[in-house]
Length: 120
Length: 130
Length: 97
Image (cartoon, rainbow over all chains, first blue to last red; front, side):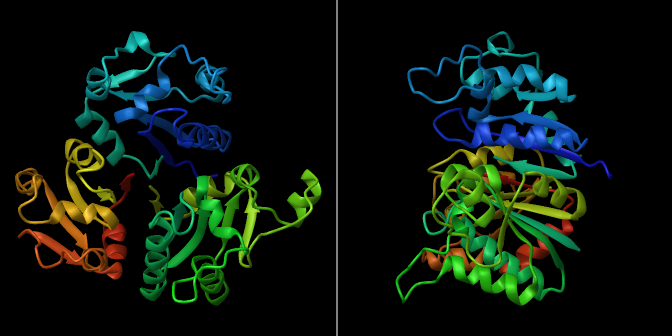
């Protein structure tokens, strides 16, 4: 099978809408298809990675532990926009898993290198 | 060139499905090929045959069905997203104990792998959403 | 890269996000076309970005919203066929939803 570079671009916060969760489902399938998968988190998308989701009160299935499972799928390229973190008063320490924090320009360069950009 | 189209919102509430439709028509008019149209998130709601829009307005669902029929388009509705939102074909009805189907002509329900395959096989993939 | 923006700049930060991310072509569609209006608060931002980006707006969306009579200079208006050409000419496209 051809391998292409797929980047999932996540820009929405978790739980207020379903895009974050349904994007993760795409990531897992792309990995199962052995594609070259990376994830970029920009704008409110960085909130998806914030550790400590406790969704019992809103009775919505939480997906924080899925981040930990990505490594088992060989999905290790997670890029987080530095400016989006700073704007929201977050640092890499607040996030559930290790990520690469990059400038917007660096993320832009990575986006240009992709074959497929899936926007959520 | 081979194009793939992803539609992430349902009919009427967002313009996404309309823009995607006009884009798809233009792709075909220019002599390109559409490998697949993939409906995800609320986009699966474009596949219900139960809509009755006003007579003087466009029929979003049936014009997709017509475009698919005239151009042999492959229009795929994501099974997981469809199950959540109640878009049902014969197979899903039997599998999940439902008492009705509502899938419009020209659409088929299948897995997310179809989206990944569309990305692999096409030269360009465009996302229409909110 | 082709950046597709479908939301008004006064509603969502999609335009800012696209401008920060590099260079290439920006296509305004749906409610995104409001960014192309003369005299709006974002006009300066768009003019400033014209060195790095080529700006396009979808005619059908401008006309639908009654704003094709007040377009900024430097915005190229295109139809759906032109939209297809833009996608074909750029290796990838990002929809800033």
